[in-house]
Image (tube, rainbow, N blue to C red; front, side, top):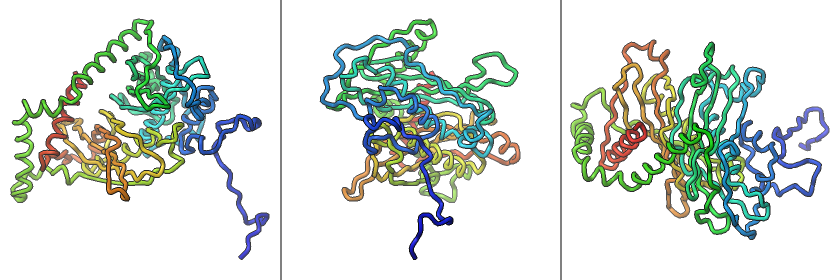
Length: 432
């Protein structure tokens, strides 16, 4: 049957996102393939609408142009950027971020944090000379992210961040999510979440590590943040490659203790402790094909999107394991090991690595999510990301179940036991 576009039964569909380029200037229009993905959140769109010349250069970088010849020295205030969520007055924005408990959806917040950190890194690394080629900046890791209090979706929210430390080609950015506490005038009580992102710079043409602009902290607070970041960087260097050696030299007994409990499950399941469960029995998995709408300004999959998908799988894993609604506490660490491209077949695999029972009011569930880029044609699978999250159980859910208890998780193989010990040791070092 023929359709008539002018029929009153025909409903036209229009895009709901604005173009990142001037509608009235055809000379500035880039090919659609160079636009960033259209998946992004309102915050990412707001960052694009700043229409900075920096971002326009990144969309179509002059690769044959010379690299930056002289590094600049900047202070943290030059990269400081603030985002304001007007939740109290913007009902549509509020609905986009609402979770089932009338709090801000953490996965969406992770996306926004990554987008803002990326914007800050670009600001710091920008060169006043538009004829030099820009740097290719990528998220290397999330060092730590701590939720200090629940974040309401009914109250205005502010996200602010700046560069706090630089190395030769790496940049550390600290972000704070701020929401005023009811009846409190203490600024520290307004900080709802803190996060530290590490970005690395690569030369757009060669792909090799590229030097970044220097940083000169000015205030006492900026100097303290710089020193703390320097100490974390030195700790990362000492720790690199030392995990396995430490276990081999001094952790054999710990490894055997973990495996001994797992062997009972494998060899004598009828006699195993009923408050214990094998690590492999906590696993969940999902997969997806990466779509063009999820790409970043470099044409690769947006790191914030990967964090969102990993978080939601981790949350589901903790929920299925505990049997009660979990509550997010921390992102312990995220590694971005290799880029993920449009069209990649991406598999997320999660498990509960271990639990902690020292605080009976707040037992901890430590969840690992590993992302694999799988290529069936080549019969290959490579790890692209590792994510580590910590959850507890929502107090109101726990109050309704007096018989509730968190089971102990034990590994069944030496490889699993090593992963558990390495993560335990890394968490211990981060808490020092």
